[in-house]
Amino acid sequence: MPFTLATWNINSVRLREGLVCRLLEQEAPDVLCLQECKSPVDKIPLERFRELGYGHMIARGQKGYNGVAILSKQPLEDMGELDFAGLGHARHVAVRLENGVVIHNFYVPAGGDKPDRTINEKFGQKLDYLTDMRDWFHREGAGKSILVGDLNIAPREDDVWSHKQLLKVVSHTPIEVEHLGDAQDAAKWVDVTRQDIPEGQLYSWWSYRARDWDAADKGRRLDHIWATPDISNAAHGSRILRSARGWEKPSDHAPVFATFDL
Image (cartoon, rainbow, N blue to C red; front, side):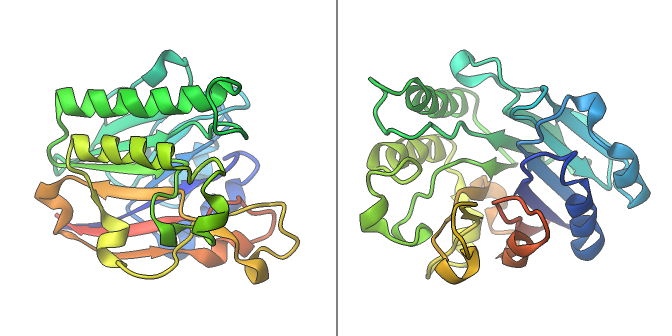
């Protein structure tokens, strides 16, 4: 049975409950993975989501920061969470679908403003998080899995509005791209979005600082959907719902979609 999956950094699930409902009503993905929920699990407004057919949720949360959740039309089995870099943050949750596929939902640390771990502790934490991700998947493997989330790195030159101008900007520096690539290689993850859309500029995030984000179009592709090689060929229909960035009081991220015939 095919299922459609979406991933979205919502930047507060309680503040943007209405936007989540709008997405569920208009797009009706079978599974929606959210990051930066900024809410304890018991405060996530699950009742409205249930009314729209999403009766299952597995989440990890904390007050005001981080937080990840997976909403689904079908039952989910909680597969736990990983605390990479020992940060004690709610940045990962994993579930198993009824078809046996495991979904990992990640919110990788943003890394602060300066791409230098000697003066910016947050950048060091980001690199350490990615290193732990690499080591865990290298050790444990991933088989029949999908990895999604705000990975806070735009790896390709055409994943940013200006490769040259962003080479020293956190999210596109060579060391971050290398660390993300190492984590991807650890389980031979396939970048499903770029498998489906191999060429051209592609963004999922636009800064709040831009007066007119749409006209300026200075975006970055920070949100990703990966799949293990055994199921990557079953993926299709990848897209980014750019219009959601223009909804009232939006997140600065747009949802990313893929469909899997599994």
